[in-house]
Image (cartoon, rainbow, N blue to C red; front, side, top):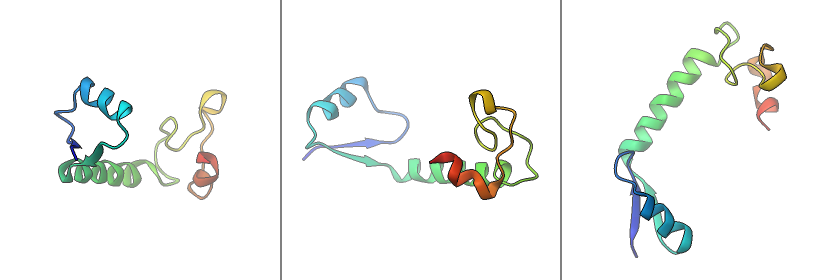
Length: 81
């Protein structure tokens, strides 16, 4: 079975089409991509996901008409569901 590995550099449009048309193809996330995602998540959480953080649209604020409304950390999970 062919595996398409997502590494952030080599995914082609044809591979995306192939996966969409052949659901038996396996897709994997490269370890380097997983580490980069974790690093990004850690940065976001430490920088923007606390009540003293500067307001950042949709990270710790509402969206649309609520864009200027801060969402407290204790309410973020409710906001995101």
